[in-house]
Image (cartoon, rainbow, N blue to C red; front, side, top):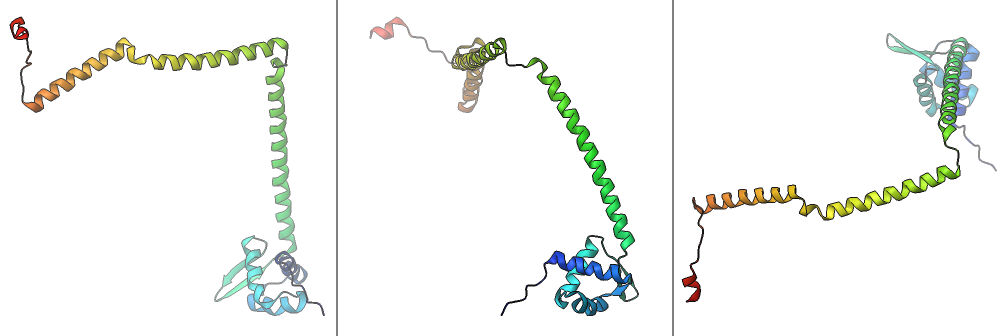
Length: 187
């Protein structure tokens, strides 16, 4: 005893479209729910879902008249949609082909002076060595940056500002300088 395999969603969509194309008629949902299971083997529970997917993809037209929803699809519209899609894809293909040719031409232009010669290999190696040397020199400059006269002067200015701020906080308004006489040192 073998189990009967159900239809895939795409097969249900195709069979639903066959209903519209064969009859070339306008249907209500209740009509399709009666016809689809009998003639095309689409389960009653999935008729509405399949129909809605066809409406969403603009393969089936629908309109509300009064309190009823009507659905229809004619073969001429499907042919027209396919022809439009074919034209669109054809124009996209031609644009992509033109871009590809343009890119290939640009690649050829760029590669004109880039043949792998001995001179080019030597220059490339020299360039790499110079880049490494540049990185080493930058590291060395950063190491000695604290001895830079501009940096030293900036530190002096910051120290002066800090000393003035400390004097303001402690209430000292005058600079006190201590001088030692030689007598004090000998005692």
